[in-house]
Amino acid sequence: MTLRPDTFKSLVKVAAEQVIASAPELTALDQAIGDGDHGTNMKRGFEAVLSKLDAIGAQPLDEAFKTIGKTLVMTVGGASGPLYGSFFLAAGEALAHKKLPEDLAEVFGSGVNAVSARGRSQAGEKTMLDVLVPVLETLKADAGRGDVIERVRTTAAEAVARTAPMRATKGRASFLGERSVGHVDPGAKSSCVLLQAVCASLEAQR
Ligand code: ADP
Ligand code: MG
Image (cartoon, rainbow, N blue to C red):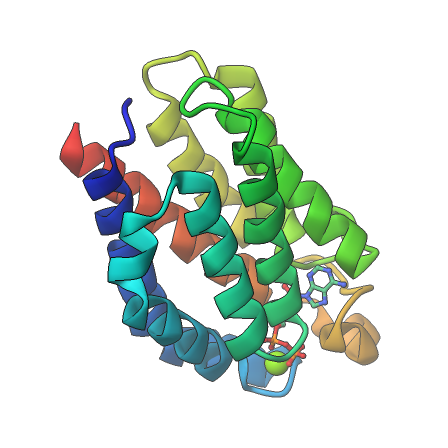
């Protein structure tokens, strides 16, 4: 796996377009256990990212991640904006002294730790971390394996489904207590959409 600047730019484009396309689904999930804005929040944020695509594509990878992070913090709003923003800002910081693909697990881990610190949350609370943490575990275990992309896809898809029986203890859904059970978490789904898009794009470019 190599990550050339043009590869990175097209990854960002595909991922942003996928999030925008899944806005209605994300909104429907958030209507069930939140306030119904996750789709519009994410759509607004990733439209802003798309509007900066040329600049992002021209930046060194660490700066590009930070630009994405700042853009998401400024435009997504809700709880998820600062959390996704923290992910990309911290991953960008890590990239300043790490290399891809060999340090992928460490870079991704920096992003996951930042979400956890910002959200005062951890896996098992029915949030985006219930996708991000299992994917990090897969990256740590399988980073050197040829089929890591496929394993990340499977991990993310299984992890998002596992949020349905969970009871939310963080975020708006936690206000519902037991009534949050039986619904997929919107942020877990948007993390899955992003990861699936990146994986599909990497597979197509191999
Ligand atoms: P809001 O809840 O403010 O309306 P969004 O609807 O955009 O914001 O995002 C909701 C998603 O954010 C949730 O589905 C969950 O995945 C994620 N989230 C909320 N609070 C936390 C937290 N403390 N830690 C991690 N993720 C969180
Ligand atoms: Mg919401």
